[in-house]
Length: 248
Image (tube, rainbow, N blue to C red):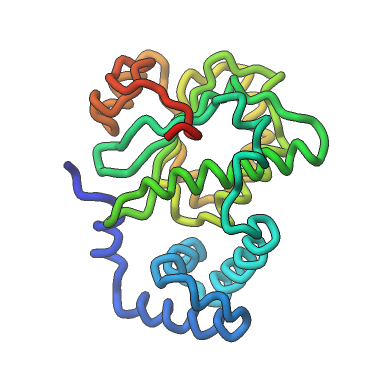
């Protein structure tokens, strides 16, 4: 198994300077929100790295996250009764792990049919949190990140959901910073390249660096560079059956 990205990052960036900044950030955020005491240093470090070790900016993002968590996830988790419409579409799976030991999710984007209106957007965002929490729960010790494959085969305008996508991207970037390792797009249709121009502005620079578009001609070989065959889904020529995320 390859050395995990997180182990490498800890070796390179776990400097005394970084540790001191985490400590200073903790003093700052605990003074403004005592519930920050319940969050470990690794979480604070992710927010700090997401803001290039700028304590002021990282603290502001983290305090915003704590407020969001209290308001959007008051029970501490999203129950399945809150996301029944999204869950019924069976569009997200957790097939296995990549070669570095990170779990990865598979999203069949053509199965997403947005529910119109504000309630539909809110349910999609709750589903996003549910999926992220499920995925993060599978991250093993020694790792902090996960990967995702977004399969766009059959995707069309009926699946396009700008408000939902924008809300989901914001949650990923602001509430789960430095959790995403790589995001692979496969079976990308031409129509998506048009919609992508509307989605792209929502994505920050750090996240953009993690996006990989895979050509159909080299699909299996490209995925096998990152995921071994016994962990690759059957639909890509691997050995893993697809089990809906809620059944994991």
